[in-house]
Length: 172
Image (tube, one colour):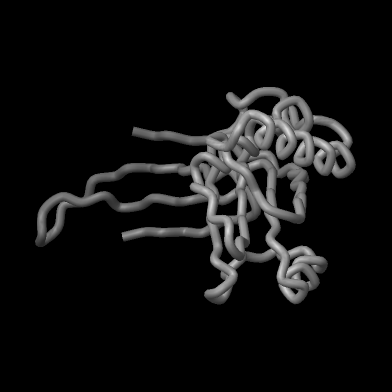
């Protein structure tokens, strides 16, 4: 069996949005949901020139809260709904999404890249949401499967994993 894929390296756009203040979830009152979606859309419209047209997008949401914890899945749903038409054309373009809720009382563990004004919000003891939208880095797998007889039976000889940015080789 011989499976091959060719990767074209492209500049992948990525957008990071910072939404200061308390977050609301899809379970909040209709009024609160609509106001929060409008706030997300306003911030997104200022930062994103046009919707991403690629497939294989990711959406990552980090929420640092002080008093008002919000369920991750419900926050993610509201954020994704708000970004439709601004950050991307349709939800079907998203292949990965996740939300992480951080309690300010414990040390927040927000993964880089961390926008510079985040430290200011933390020092001022404010709640905020960081939304990162981008194109997932593709990982292509090329395998040339050759079965090798050995002392422990038959095994695969070689597999190669090719990230879009370079090559990493794994072999037996």
